[in-house]
Length: 317
Image (cartoon, rainbow, N blue to C red; front, side, top):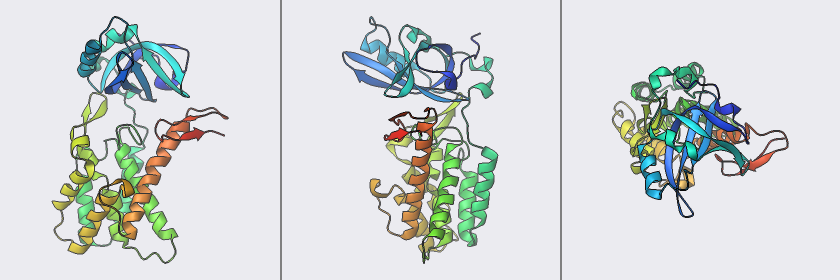
């Protein structure tokens, strides 16, 4: 059995890699004269990009077939070479491509070595309960508590495939951050007479549809087709509509508006109320700052690079 002796956080440029890792997000990409596979390696210490180039004698069709066969969330032996590209350390696989034909038997590995879940799940759960308990309207409180407690995967799923909070428990952590930031913004703006119950409900439920866009597979969560084909806002709205009884129709419509417009200028529905703009700004702040923190986490003082999560130049003083 291949032992787990090397972890993601230990991979630096210029070293050979030969160890088991969880593989996910396998994606076929174009290169000059052929194709390669972009995927993510993960274990309990973090995540790392990996490019599978293959060998010169492998055709584009063979690379494509291998990509389709990779089972996201399973453990594979990764043999390659770590290098720094555009300031980011990534693993390149050439001859070791043959190891991606078959995953290693997961039941031979300790899950605690492979599951990447940096969020404090107990603290997040407690924080969400505290935020929900601040809602005074019984109908709105019932909506929030019922939806959060009855939606499978809400506490376990990631908040995104790659950009931010892309780890187990990331959705709940991002939801709590968004809610806390939204309330802080509302409390900071002078003479901001917002409907606090609606604001809390909108923030707590703004991404609830994402729980239905992922499923557990192996040691990770993988995105379902609904993630791209339907979108989490539409799924979230449908979820809320099933639990609208007992709420003032106008306030329920406002909560629904917050959910549908939380992407701000980038969404189909634009925010039109202070509460909706507040949740949009809070959502962006949580997502972008998480990405900025992750992009700078492994930089040494005085180093900078193009952040893979923020898409912006980042720097560590």
